[in-house]
Image (cartoon, rainbow, N blue to C red; front, side):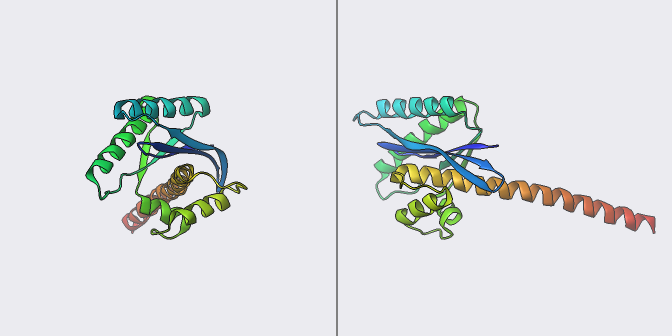
Amino acid sequence: MPLIIGIDPGSRLTGYGIIEKDGQKLTFVDAGTIRTETTEMPERLKRIFAGIERIVQFHGPTEAAVEQVFMAQNPDSALKLGQARGAAIAALVNLDLQVAEYTARQIKQSVVGYGAADKEQVQMMVMKLLNLSIQPQQDAADALAAAICHAHASGSMSKLAVLNALGGMARGRSRNSSRRR
């Protein structure tokens, strides 16, 4: 059963969420945030990297999903977010995880059914989909949403691969049957 870690990168708070996928059933495993309260950016990146590594080593996820950077109004904010995202991805790749990336719109569409959903709608749907009685912190909920999006996407991709294989087999049969004539 795949164990999926989702990451919502941030330079001050990086959310993480881990779910298990068993067929169509998704089960909550863990979620939280990595806080980087220091003012020095290199130290923040070090804490993000170390925090992600520690979580991955503890839980042993088999798949990873990271939210892509959005274009912020402030270029400095976008740069810091990109650096935080890079630290998280580097930690995942350093532990031999392949990383899938999704836009915020893709994640919201997958979880809520509406790509322009607000953060509260995402939190509520994460609670509902994972049968949680306590609302996760916003950054943790966003990370869980990334993991849920990946679970949905990987299931769709698997089905698509099977359909493509079957389609190729069907095409092969039709070619063979036409040669017999």
